[in-house]
Image (cartoon, rainbow, N blue to C red; front, side):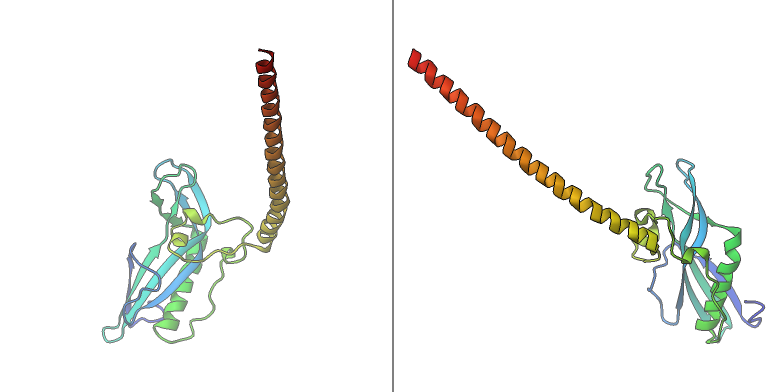
Length: 205
């Protein structure tokens, strides 16, 4: 921004309480939905990499003071190994930082200066992913941010699994129904034999 707008000064503030679409008057929003980051569990030391890191930016330019402010929140993830409820922060991958900054500057120029900021750089993770995203461990998903879409391959697998599960469920249901009837008739036969034996014994006496 110093190169693009040398007359203006900008500051970046980390704000973990930032909420999507909750903007003060004059503020703008940019949501990066497909950043890549590496997470490290502070409890069990498990590390994992995710191409679905969500970063929220709120931006404001005071034209009279020639000063701008950017507030940033990186959404966290839970460790799926130890199951702790402690949310862990991510460290951004170096190869992803440059494109992330470029996209932020593009958004600043478009929304705060009403200029054509250029093309947004598309991350590899923004394409359809063949790996499942575990939304129950994602802070962004829990706050209602929809940022992951399954690939056609995953959708086909889900459809195949669903179709295969129905005959199994019907078969299991039929089996349970037959088993219940078999048990009913067996109990009825045992009761009949028992009554006959009791009746025969009383007659003999």
